[in-house]
Length: 348
Figure (cartoon, rainbow, N blue to C red):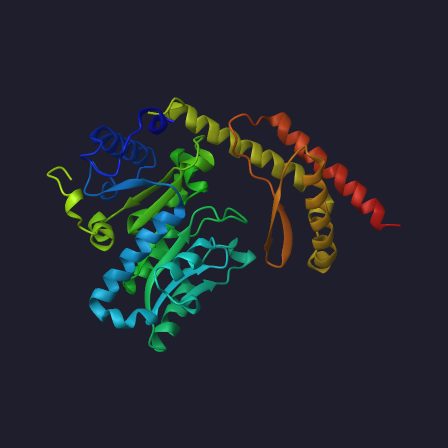
């Protein structure tokens, strides 16, 4: 909105000092809320930047990681580079891998299990990396997630960063969705170990009540990005090269959303039909597939789905500033009504 009103041309500091300085202030403001280490802050040793999307940020970080490793082993070895994530990792990493020249077969989507709440196992990561190295491949990039799309799983950052460090990999932490909750002290634990990562992203448009596009990228070593992404055009050379909600209200919003999510979970757990046995999987998947269609067709609530551990599940995400307890109760009532209708038809 501000950009539209003032026509800010913010492609470098000289073109718009105010926009650039405001960007650094806002990045450090949120970084302080998240208690990020000084190595990610402008007030410390490094800093960050506002991007339009996670895609942009990952292109920059993966290209930087690629160039760092190729400077040591030679550009002719780009076909040996391997990137790692889990089977819950957002598909953007596979797209970006291809954009920066990494063969699609060199991305490892490591399998997760329900026993680990669908988080990426450090032990399995190490075994996979060792296997690749024995085959003559070169590990260079690890994507860890705080808040996966399907289950909001939070990967164990500390142990994963330790594995990556042993093999010289760049670690990117994608906290696009759930990272917002970490401004609340009681949820900060989900990014414990972030000091071991090289880069970190959070999308303000997902749970911070702002509009597209607003992806925040913090980088421990910005010079790696500038070295990889700069073109050094003469025309760009020069000598210089708080939201209305407030911190307290942001935290209160996030806490209320977590509370409502737990309320919805409690309602689900009280219905024995929502706790099927493995032998019921096929039937449950068929019912949930029909349920998704009729719920979205009724126009009262909207849901999406995922397949985790072979189970077709429906998702409930609470993140709008106007959502109240009554909406949660209404959503559950809609689910029950349609489940009743579907099951009554299957019985005859």
